[in-house]
Length: 207
Image (cartoon, one colour):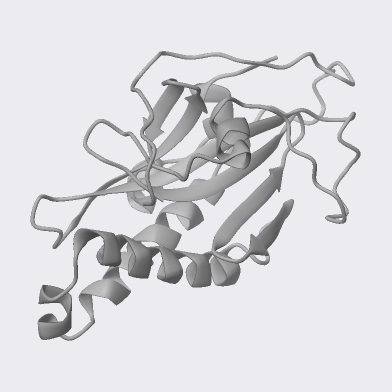
């Protein structure tokens, strides 16, 4: 089975609506801050505050979602979404207009953007040998004045270039996704590959 954008949309289904809400509600909380305070903040501070709100929202909105577990170490939040064929490892990031995101140049960051399978001790997930892992970034783009959430996207990184991306629409725009019937015979352990289009180089930084 190829894990491309279409299969990811099908497997995540209506959970995409929650993922979008995690980010849109976080930015709404930022906009609710005193205007004088917001005017004094640097772009980096805006991203940091919004990210803190995103983590709070993710813990609340994804906590009861089927197949979702999470890990929080310091400021790093990872959501693990177990589906029938794959475990998605999800991070939340601010994106630029070219759908690029930034991260501190560590081995962990390099492993993530290059789709190197992580070690997840103590999370109670299925054994690593049972299902492959696919790393994803759920990211948001702000308008030029940083006064509005312009769009929300799912990004599958692949080193210097994205393998594929898609926009996460508002819930009312998502429609109904048809999930393959559980009664259809399927291989018990499919061979999974991640495939898609090259999109953009990845930057290195603190946002």
